[in-house]
Image (cartoon, rainbow, N blue to C red; front, side, top):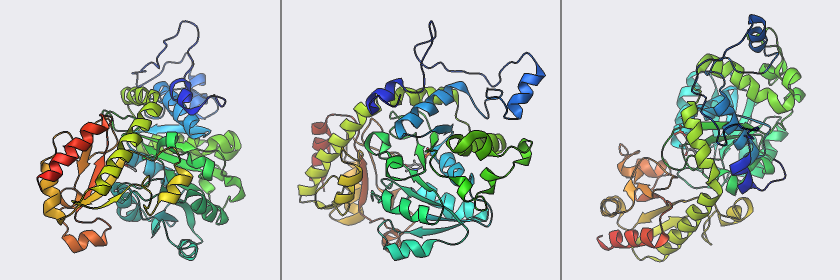
Length: 427
Ligand SMILES: *Cc1c(COP(=O)(O)O)cnc(C)c1O
């Protein structure tokens, strides 16, 4: 599949039916798989043979879709998870345990921030958060001897900061740890973090990959490039025998290309669950087939909307890295030359009250705690996800009281802009 262009991979990678087999990826709606002898099944349990035995660990539908996403990202192995949250959790927990430490960009999805700063902290894993535009000294100072990974988002949700992936990858590698990138907003159509040095890529497939607000899901892709065996003391889970699998050493048995994902499947899926339902994997697969076509339209619409609101007298500010003059314009040109995503943010003059009135008067764009699908939607965090905070607390959290997160769907841009125009007229 390597020789095909990315839009072709969206449609062809991960599944090649043989003579007379279904053209579309079949949904294997089966919890379990049949074997003729116990010996054959025993080999699966010892990880000596590959095959399916129980859908909590692996399912053929999921594996086809994961292989397609791995091809899109340029990775060697991938797994689907039940949600983006599960992907973020597993991506870190697969290599960090109680007593370990992780460096993370502070510009990350709110759910990921809670997962790291509260829930994983309760598990004994410490996080140091650095601003994506921190100085090299600040980044350097965040590392500790027990640091096991660096985490960031290509385009942060909802701050829309673009990460300098190469800089974070270099810092991680100097400290002998991998860089994990959540590539949800950019998708592999607009940025492939592995090409810039990232080692592991995660997704909330709930967003653009599914693209139609139909299924929650996640994915983890391994580049196969990080050499765990150079740091066996740091990554004993990958480089020393796993007693729960009769002493298999993942890096020895599965190589750099397969060790990380095999361990996550064999240990984390086995013990913690969070597999994706094959029905949902099938829906992601449908979304992936049109991902390239859709992303171009999302970006075209967002660029047009951003340019429109930028010039509007009732708009206080707008953030979109595709706009010249945006603080991340240059990073956007480097990492996202073909477009970033369909999400922009802006502030309405008049603060919180004006923002509320504007949103109430939108007719096409709906108010949702969601982004990145075919229907234009928006959210006013000060009045929804962050409504318990006063204006000062909001600013401290990096969310302006007037901030509106606006996710441009696939409708015609003239209609989206007309909707914004009429809603602005009412304030
Ligand atoms: C939504 C989102 C997540 C969480 O994904 P779920 O599928 O909702 O669990 C993680 N990262 C980013 C960037 C997101 O937008």
